[in-house]
Length: 135
Image 1 (tube, rainbow, N blue to C red):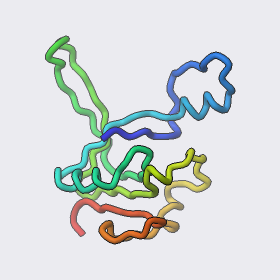
Image 2 (image 1 turned 180 degrees about the vertical axis):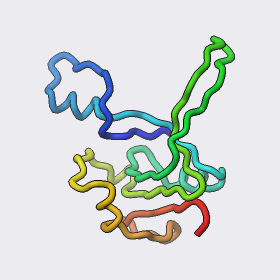
Image 3 (image 1 turned 135 degrees about the vertical axis):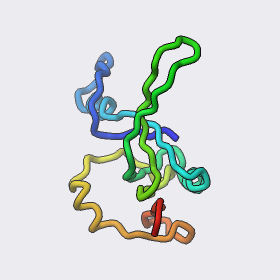
Image 4 (image 1 turned 120 degrees about the vertical axis):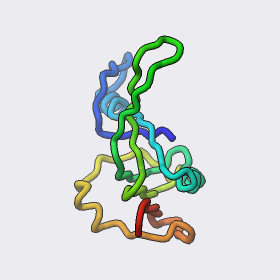
């Protein structure tokens, strides 16, 4: 799956007649790949993730290095790998998605506000969590 990460600047240029606030919101997203191991946990998460879902991920940032068979250039792809003791939190689904507001708290403060729930029986208004690795 691909994931848009908010809060990282890139080198996009403003569009003609674009307001500075609109440019800041548009240019603050970076797309990354996400790999979930083992495959069956990835399949379970893909059943619950829809376009516009709000997720919280804890995993390893990995770089895959390979030789492109067409151009013979060495290519590097950075992705977030969820394996071992990684964490995937479902904070909202695509139908509830609203424009994201800047977080008012740091990531360390968020742990106190979230409840861990069983993914199979989660009320619509609460967060869902999949914990990968040994329990």
